[in-house]
Length: 285
Image 1 (cartoon, rainbow, N blue to C red):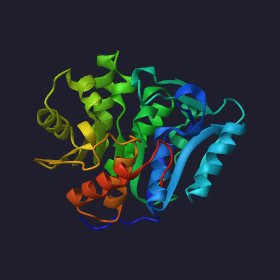
Image 2 (cartoon, one colour):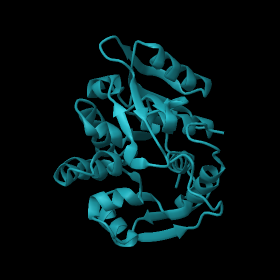
Image 3 (cartoon, rainbow, N blue to C red):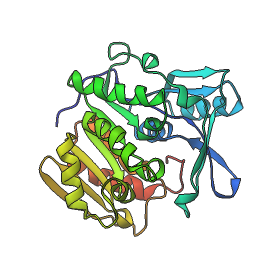
Image 4 (cartoon, helix red, strand yellow):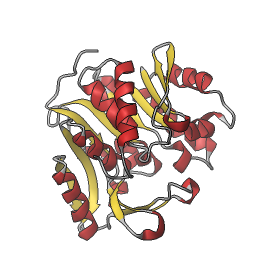
């Protein structure tokens, strides 16, 4: 795979806020787009983020965290009409995940810069943003725009957290988004939401690939990764012996390698090493 042209390696689009970890002791950088952008920058990718935060201390803190990592935040807007989104996560109990929605849900498609204004090798889109309008239109429009101009878009799916209770809405919203993506990242819990409990990974990956994405990164058990590449499925085993501490780390490293032109299977190997090396959520090494 040859490197894709662009002023940025990545343009990440979607949600940004702070995440409150289990017990409410600490607040780290939150939001799928925000965390992916942070990992991308830590991996050396030239990364910009498109998002909205409130005109408050939480928004300023989130932007400062990104600046320290050298993420370009010129397209992160502050608004006085909503507070910065706060995510509540508990890695030991994923079903306890919840969110206090804020400014990021109000991102509009006309606020996403055009490819001319923000040329990027890869556009990285947050699946969380598909959960509510107008951010849904911004995320879906970004994916479809990239596909229509033969660009490359990456989608981080979050069906397990957002669509578990609404199967009909899952198909209606997620299938067009998946079809617009060049590459999709998801986990085994997402497959259960999309295809039902007990679905076999290879069969599910084939169904997803039939929608259009060229590369699918599936986080398996124990940190293993399934890769659907065209008509082929590869399973890469993790050597760290534990689940990655940050669910965003592996996909971010995979996409950072793709933007450099690394072949997909070698990109998975790099992603496995990076994900196993992350010490705690929200802390790119």
